[in-house]
Image (spheres, rainbow, N blue to C red):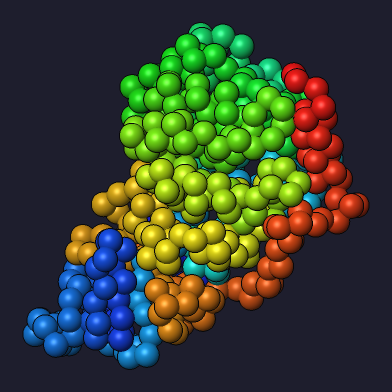
Length: 440
């Protein structure tokens, strides 16, 4: 996922060097692997050694040192479900003339990337970006023209004509169209294929609880994507669409809301166990300031999936309706749902990296992995809010100087309280209420 051009450093950007970072605690990102009074030796952008400080080899004696005896070093966080170029709170599905969309998308993507990095996200998967803006963003960051997380790009989401996100997506109407769209995305340089298996909340005329593709169509898409070496991520709110996606063999489910035809959320344990059996990753698009149905919540669904053995990862739909500063709030909500802190940190680091195709590259603090890490005061295994107290953010071996990030205030998940003037939420709730009154 890097372009052919040489690296060009941003003026003032920190450059990789040889150094040893020591800390009171090192969370490696591997299950149950926590080191105390430990250190990492970083050579450029690559981790060369990890272990107890007392065992540090003599060959690192001349390297620069950074000591954080009261702090914790952990892998950089991963956002598995972002949208670069989108703007929370903006009019949904605006036309190109209204925002001069291509230029605006590019500029806003640069802003969003820095904001994500500033909250500690060192890798992010873009699951839908008009004009392949995310591909361009990935190249700009890879080549040193901009600072931000490592980007995994999907380009425009593949959808049906008039389907969810059709204005910024790639519309298809047949299996031949689907294969052609996948090949076009491959030619454009995407890393992952995103498909809208159900309707969505922000596209008028679509139903979140109804499938947009047949099993045969999704199977053709998955087959073509896998043939070309791409994973498949699917947008799926409705249970019907989730079931079809699982049968087709997708790799990743975004949302997994389990909305039934009557507009209510009805978790299906057997389907969840099938998702777990197939090893499909799922994000629940938390933080749950936008519950799937008024009075019903995202957090219990995350717990239900976790209890059935589903591989939960930290995707928040950042950029579509959620700002980057909400990332940590989403982790707190998972803890409130009853998911252990150790599991949440795995979901946000090593498992999330694997979910977006970066296993063996990032998400773990180990030799041969790239140096993506955070230094925080305190220990997130004791208190997740220690992730707010960052001492250092390192991306690919370079220190990243964070911007000031506004504090995020989530809406009340239990009551579903929201601003009645919020037209997006109003339409979302109205459509779900309508579904409860009539079976589509």
